[in-house]
Image 1 (cartoon, helix red, strand yellow):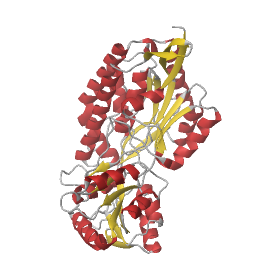
Image 2: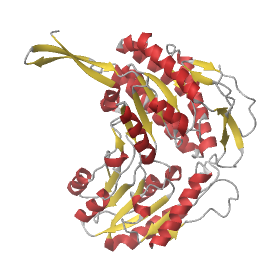
Image 3: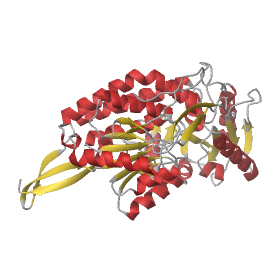
Image 4: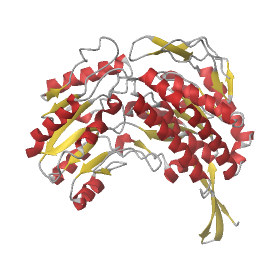
Length: 487
């Protein structure tokens, strides 16, 4: 087990070692990441800050395990059994992981539990898929029968964000491991404790040596992982700006890459539907976890003559949102994850006002909270889709109501974005809903509800990413097809 610092009241466990190749090892440097509570602004834990030398050690372990170890050679059922052990160890730690996410990132406890339950479903989905995945099949060619085999790509570097670290990791790791790859996971420096708990689950599951490493680190060390000549593929979730950088670095050596990036998703309200049944869910889809969700519905598109009606109804719902301590069961919105994130939200709200949009509710720090990086849920009306608050990802609890003239205009506005990750349409006329859902260019569209289906293909069009995660389409990017003639 890792060396743990003394646990204090209202703090998290601190870690003194890194998980490299399945073992807890001393870090190469005395530098540490101090975990700051977004609720109290106090230091609550620390973990080692991984350096390039630690990445090198982790990649060397993964390379050795892939080239010479048993993991890629195991049968499907053997790998599935190993993944099942991880899943069971993960389930045993879900309460602690959920509390850690709430403490270090500020997600309300109910949301944290929901995210980690989703992580469990991702592992189970990969296990179920692995047991029936067609790693080999016969193909008929003009030259006769041939054997198509799907081989693991090799060493995978996975880089995940801070908003939901274990669920983000679970969108990648089960698929990569199911394919037979070995993995180096680099969590963000914000919110690293829950991923160190995930490393404990890997240790308890007794995966073969070298198969998995967990190295929390900053951006420069992440770039070292991306550039590493012994890493065959990068799987990244994060901002579109960072994704562009990673893609350019992967292009230098033709490394494989999967990117799950930003979004500015639209919820389209048709003219024929009453607001009462779905509007609370639509608002939650935009502001839950303080809007720090890539697929959040942050643009609400409405028929022009219903603009004021929708604005009033959304504002009334948002007035009832409780902002406060994320451990309080009554809390709906906790703090933003970092001070710089609150600064970003404040800057965008000021920009929206400057652009001519009208703040209906929110637009300030909660006056009753003198500590923590809190921000009130904020609603803009009179928004034109050309405004930056409608075009750029704010990653905060900020919604924009945008009027449209007719169905064609609604589809045009929804598609007038560099992003295409998610979306929803609310209509009684299901033929109309189907038309809109088909014509909006987004990786997932929902009808009369919203969510994130993470056990089937999830990912984006345009600058929302490259590739998919979940289901068969999530495993395939970790495999290289090879055709063998004459077998």
